[in-house]
Image 1 (cartoon, one colour):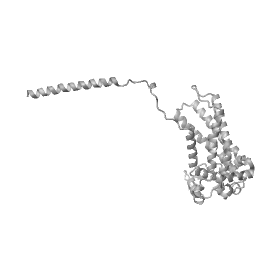
Image 2 (cartoon, helix red, strand yellow):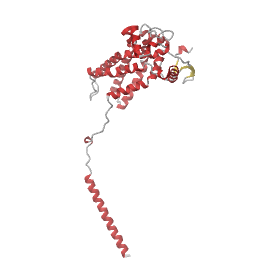
Image 3 (tube, one colour):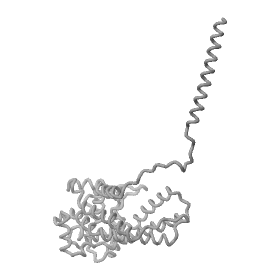
Image 4 (cartoon, helix red, strand yellow):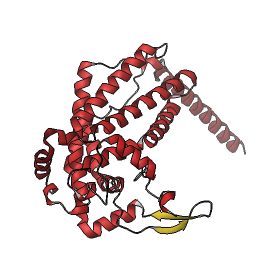
Length: 329
């Protein structure tokens, strides 16, 4: 019994010695730990933003990927509806005549023109986007540097300066890119009448120049320019007012800007339809002549005619495209 108690006593002493050694080691390790530094002493890792070339290539790739939808939209804006309408009911349960959706439209165009046919005018469209978003912006940045917002907030002078700068960028972009836009629209519209002159990019340039000279590359230029400037002025003005009077967080400002952009595009969309129609009106193409389309002398006549017939929003929606009420009787 005594031997057992002695062994227990020895074990307890050994356990205490081990505990003390562990405590000493922990204190030593605590001394070796680095002292906490202020947050300012640490460098916060921030990923580098993509280069300008990467952003440019991404925009061009997205433009090429979405080209079939742009192709269908242009044909809808021109009033080309090869598929019959169907009768359905709206949200209120009333009978309504619906036009085919974008996907039905693209399926039909693929059947009659093949998969490659959905990419008519792609080269001209890519050149239009490239010249507008890259060359014009780089040129204007060299002339008019952007004035950043100060700590006290954006002043009226800074807002006016930046709006003027952005307006010049937009105007220059439209001026440089519109000839390619005309070529692209006519190449896409050639599917209506089967005009062979617009099969290739080179042939389209020669045909337009032979018909109207350099002036032919700027048909529909005014509504195109007015559309882009109107969207810019409206979104910039309303966004500036919201930032000045409403306490919005940065994330809320981004959502607000996106909603304003969508509303402005929808509001001035008829000008985009007018520009597309004027690119073909009077050109000798089937898509720009009766019975597909009246021949307009001025773009304002085209706008008034579309508004009167309720055709000013052609191609604005992907689903549930309805005929104007005047055609339902």
